Image 1 (cartoon, rainbow, N blue to C red):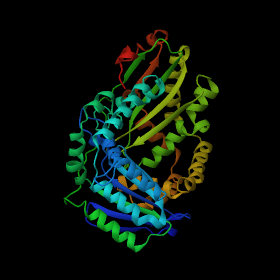
Image 2: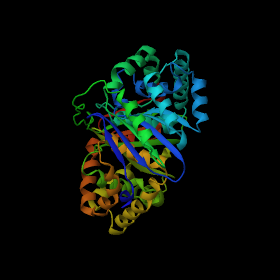
Image 3: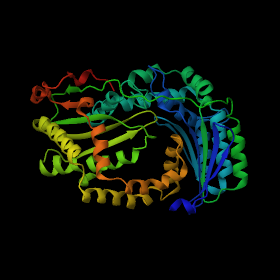
Image 4: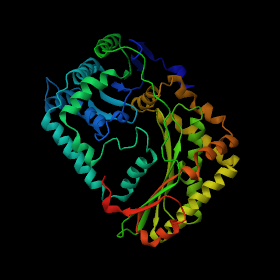
Amino acid sequence: MRELHLKPIEIHLDSNHKIFALPYGKTPLCYLAMLIKAGSEKDPKGKEGLTDLWAEGLTLGTKKKSLEELIFEVEKLGGYLEGSAGWDFTLLLISGLEEKGSNLLEILSEIFYEPDFPFHEMEKTKERRLSNLLKLKDDPSKMADRLIWIMAMEGTPYAHPISGSLSSIKNITLEDILHFHNEIYPQQRCTLFILSKEVKEVLLEKAKDTLSKLITRKGEEEKTSETTPSTPHPQILILDRPDLTQSQIRIAFPSLSRKDDRYYILKLMNYLLGGGGFSSRLMERVRSQKGYTYSIRSSFTSLKTCGTLIISTFTPTNTTYATFEEILSTIEDFIKEGPTEKELEEAKRFFEKSFPLRIETPKQLLNEIILQETYDLKFQNLFEEIEKIKKINIEEIKLIAQEILQKQKMQVLIIGNSEHFVKNFETFGNLQLMPYKDVSP
């Protein structure tokens, strides 16, 4: 496999801090990334979006450089700088010319240890985020994605958007950001990544010095317990917006955590059900056979302690309930019959052929390695994926479908002109109808 030609260098400074360096790529570029193994699940209640705001705030200036000066320094090195949060990690990435690797690392270090969080820049960032959220209200599709996530993750640390909400962002103060920077993030586990055409010893030594500054506390890694949504019973929320001619439909099911041994079975099952575009069952039944929609898909997210699988589509108002029924019927048939041998083999070939494209560039490979590291998975596991997928059989697909796609645990969200279809849903329990205008992004 491909990993036989890759020789990663791993340096453990202690149980919580390490360096991962890998010579990779054909172009003289260097990628440096500081991974903090804590993300938006750390956001305090009422201040959701804090972690992501802090991550961006790191890039807005230091004690020594204003935002403009920092941008100039990075661009002078042919570089790019970004700070952002995920659900289970936070990342600060800087890239540039390989020959300027030491300079890039110096900037990364300065950003981490001497951020300024300038008040006026932080306020501008908050205002921009609030403005973007206000625009979301005009996009039912994006609002549906946002709201179904919250419904699906109810009762877990993930039950909010990474970027926060209108109310939570307004609640975040500069003092909150400083507290997070000084008290919360130094206690988290960190990995410094170096991907470059050539990894020089001098850069590794500087990386050790950089990461050593962060070692402020040793001890056992933070323990997490398995968390599942607290609303496993059917729930249907219909948001009435009379001006719409199409309905947005979302159906969510509780799913697996990333470290679950059946992760790759779930990945293959999702592709067969609705993740494989025109190759998927949902697309074949709901679009090709019934003509209810132009597009339907399923996607899944597996996080540290839980996961979710979400089916997404849209349809004209008068076929809203028919579309919903056809989705449930397709799921029921898929659970009973599973995929055909032909469908299964075609799906396996897709993953085998697409894998090299996922690691074609250093940035793509870095993204994959970051996810492996976030969930404490070994580097070589990345290259074992295809062999694991090849061994999956139809019965395993059926079993995981039976476990995940349970009607008694589904969460349903529909945004549309409800007077044309709401009565059809009254036979379902836990039906809630409310005006779309009452929902805040």
